[in-house]
Amino acid sequence: MRPLGNLIAKSAAQSLLIGLLLGLFSSLSTAADTEPGTDTLPPLHLGDMKRERFSVVEDGKLVGGINLEIFAELAERLNLQTEHSYCPFKRCLAKLARNKIDMMMWIVKAPHRDQHIDYIQVWPGLTNIHFYTRAGDAQQLQAYEDLRGLRIGVIRGFYYTRQFDLDKSITKTAVETEEQLPRMLITKRIDAFPVYGSSHVHIASEYPQLELSEFKIPSRDMGVLAISKKSPYVAMIPEIDAALLDMIYDGTLDRIWEKYHPGRLAPVPDYIRQANPALTASPEAE
Image (cartoon, rainbow, N blue to C red; front, top):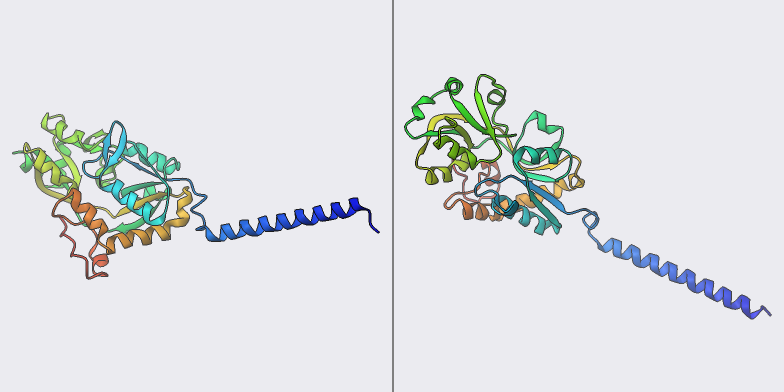
């Protein structure tokens, strides 16, 4: 007959082994039920500059606008935690390159950015780069060569066109935010400034002292979303791309756009709209 102590020790060991196995099976089951990857990712962090209708900033914080609504909708569809913060455009780009933020929106594709950025939904230039002047002065700007005789206001870090950006014969004054430029033009600190596509709509209504010149430059290809190559969310690019397309196809993107630009649709390329006949045709290039 075995000693009682040995029997108790053996029973305890068996109970411990059974408990460990049950714990292991429970852990494996929980892991299998969890969506892979997203539970261990840090919050998806959007960085954005202050820009009329696209990014509303109050007290140094992003509080609304087209970009924040698109970002929130994407995150909800993908069940992701999020963060967002304000930064001047050039600083945002630097933070994106270092992965201090994960994402920016509406970024013009450029060779010097490609080493740091992956793009989601790169759309060909649908609109032109317009130039605002003071009312009555638009005739001074009729061709590219006319830019060389003017003081041009630009947003620091923006990529307009390679020719324009590298042209040292054009006098450029760089500022942090778009809203600074109309006031500088009115007070004659600059003679003109460029704007992308539909961003000029609110300027025309708010500043009757300004007018668009007839001169335009074709815009570059633009990524709707730009993700840092160092971000863990690079692995989710296919899922994010699919969610963004779903937002386009079910009309969510147009609804967000029209909320801030009444009567206007998002600048979705025709080849995407034509893939879903339920979508209204895109507006013509401006």
